[in-house]
Amino acid sequence: MPAPTSDAVSQAPLILACDTTQGACSAALYQDGLLADRLQTMRQGHAEILLGMVADMMQACGLEMAQIDRLAVTNGPGTFTGVRVGIAAMRGLALALGRPVKTYGTLEVMAAAARSDTPLLVAVDARRETFYVQLFDGNKTPLCPPAAVTANEAVALVGDLVPEAAEGPPRIGVMGSGASLLVDKAPRFFVCAAPDYPNAAHLAEMAARDTAWEGLPPAEPLYLRPPDASLPDRSKYPARQDR
Image 1 (cartoon, rainbow, N blue to C red):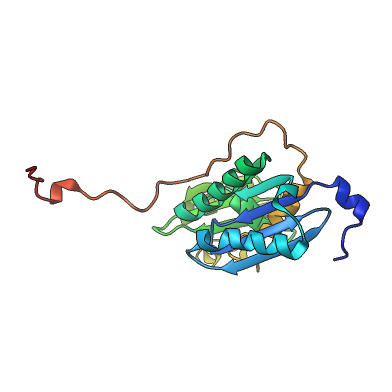
Image 2: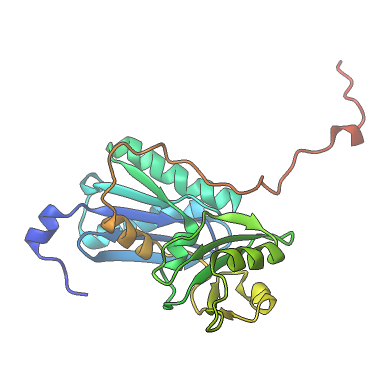
């Protein structure tokens, strides 16, 4: 991709985007085009490498943190810890730099990577027979908000929002870590080749097209179910004797 011209650079906001919600840690810089991006697939440890990725990109582009104009971050659904890592990092930078931070849905950013013009179901395997899903039309416009559903509920959701027509049922692309588990649940499902995680490069491009950056709400995580971790059952332990 050709480098932006100096006039374009002077007028376009410099955007820093990051994602830590799924099976990768990624960051990107965008200003009238993608300036730099970093991505490492990983299940845990996002907090240890995210800010290093950002610093590496800034140095490679010869930019200072104070030059960043906008911050974009995915807010879920995703792993409980992963979602919090990205949100906390961007909140901290927003406070330090005095810049706005805006959140974007994980599943919508994932959908941006799919090369398909059919309706698209993004499905993340959330374990315990649950999937985080969101349905999009052929233009990647959301048809519903993200939801935590069973496999049968995912099929029913698609049936309600993309009903079969007289000329034949429209095919539905399925992507994400849950695709292989759902594709056999309905005849019109097919696996859509795309990564099982969001990429901050797509997020940065979405943020660059976005014009609504005034009066933003606080950046908050999107959780569709409680965390898997739970407090120990105190009834199973003997009462503590204070001395």
